[in-house]
Amino acid sequence: MQISRYSAPEFDPYGDNRQTETDDGWRAPVASGPLSASLSLPGSKSLTNRELVLAALADGPSTLRAPLWSRDSELMVEGLRALGVGFERMPGAGGFGDDLRVTPADELFGSTTIDCGLAGTVMRFLPAVAALALGPTTFDGDASAYRRPMRGVIEGLRGIGVDLDDDGRWALPFTVHGTGRVEGGELTIDASASSQFVSGLLLSAPRFERGLDLTHSGERLPSLPHIEMTIDTLARRGVEVEQPSVGRWRVAPGPIAARDVDIEPDLSNAAPFLVAALVAGGSVTISGWPGETTQVGAQLADLLPRFGARVERAGDRLTVHAAEPTASGGRGIRGVELDLSEAGELVPNLVALAAFADEPSTITGIGHIRHHETDRLAALAAELNGLGGRVAELEDGLRIEPAPLHGGEWRAYEDHRMATTGAIVGLAVDGVVVDDIGSTSKTLPQFTELWERMLG
Ligand SMILES: O=C(O)C1=C[C@@H](OP(=O)(O)O)[C@@H](O)[C@H](O)C1
Ligand SMILES: C=C(OP(=O)(O)O)C(=O)O
Image 1 (cartoon, helix red, strand yellow):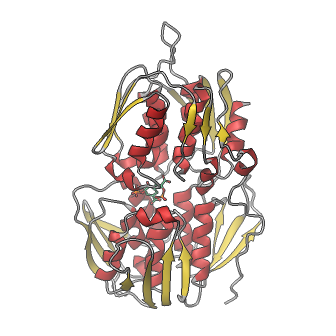
Image 2 (cartoon, rainbow, N blue to C red):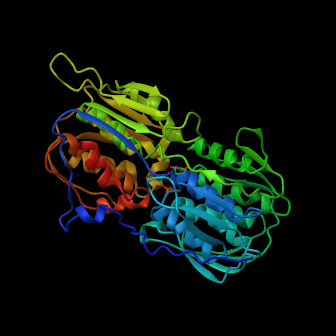
């Protein structure tokens, strides 16, 4: 089988963001009036990285059309390529870069090191693939990735017969000693820290000798829509995943079908733009919004009206209009009581919105986002309070009270969603300087360019 070496000479991990960032940070532009913007967005991180893994394990070549090109998807491609998978860029019809042809390896080979960066999907999805490879694969990543929970992956793989060396750390870096085969079978893990523990095992499970009968044992299971997405992407490739009860999944051993697939735009990355309509006034339209999707970002269409927005659908266009202004000319953003356990990745941007509400908000069910790219509860409270906000950390959430904000430094903590949250605050508060807007390259290298286009 011809394996074409993946190369990305034109890939710039900082995208357009680098052009606008100076050593002093990125001064977030203030909106000079109501918005009237229409934008399309690059591909979904969660769909791209699932389809990359499934295409790599499939029974023939697959093409991903309009995939995401960003640091997280680049790391996934590089990790799979290190195991022997072939990648070829093909001219794409979409506006955000090439399509990608993926050719599975005849045999996967370890004896390599995979850089996970700060990508949860890479560090949680690829160890099971490496277990199917012959030879040792070491997983490493950014220094801050060492803090991200990995126990469900490490304990899970050991539980189905994989030899894994983590020096007792339950964290990166660690080495998977792949033998080219995984026994599979019955397994119980605690996935309360991350749904990605479940998704990572399910994605490779059809290639295990006995498939997988996986039970989640913990108190809560965050980000359920992401597990549904995993099941859906498997089903579209001919793999059936049974759910005999809540928190249990059964995957039969068998082939994963090769398939060409269109990647939907990233609806979670639509959040900062849609939220902007409420903060700056006016409206923002995102085109290419799928009619049906497993992406959790689709919940924005129901969540934003809770804050007072009016949401309109016309074909594949979703428009968010600002709330009705108050009699005194305020933004009219309402306070909310929300459990966002399903939609943790939307929290930072929605907290910025809550900071501009006329009433207090409480967002709960999100203790697990302390283990995302950074401790997002602590980071959101620290950055908003640093600008005069009144945000209190709860054990599993945040309480946000109205307070006038002033300009100042906004730290991103290497977290793309903290960076976009700073940009939202800066729309309405002069002098907000995001220290590391380049962190948006994790999933949206074009962020600053799109943000400026939105502002007109
Ligand atoms: O599987 C996925 O693609 C994701 C699952 C979620 O992770 P957690 O369950 O760790 O929150 C989500 O927050 C993350 O952005 C992407
Ligand atoms: C939590 C996130 O990322 P990751 O896939 O690295 O977990 C996120 O994108 O909000």
